[in-house]
Image 1: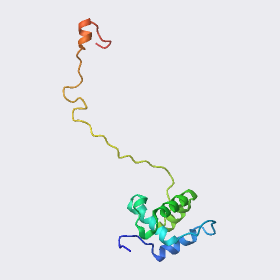
Image 2 (image 1 turned 30 degrees about the vertical axis):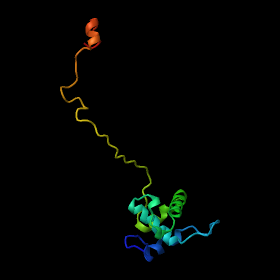
Image 3 (image 1 turned 90 degrees about the vertical axis):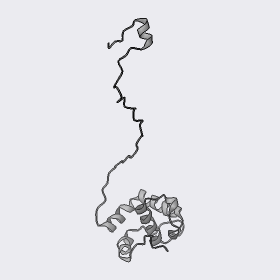
Image 4 (image 1 turned 180 degrees about the vertical axis):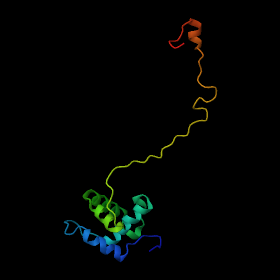
Length: 130
């Protein structure tokens, strides 16, 4: 297994193991240590779930476990046990969208125009502002 992969230490594992759900019905659960290490690796790297290294198992298992435990609130206790800090509950949004504008898009060259349109000039109409 690659050295760039994250694996939980025994100390970390001992702190979170009592917080894991037990006695669930359904299919046999795969190795928690491997899956949780994979989830932490993906959260630290910021990569897509689909790009999860195969050493952690199928990416669908990693994603489904993270998603299911997030809805159940299990991760709050795990992160508190790993970091020693209570999680901050709230919502934040960060938007890094930007639009490239043409250099003359702001009308900087000459400023706004106050000339009358050719149609109004021919008809002799005045605008309401001027």
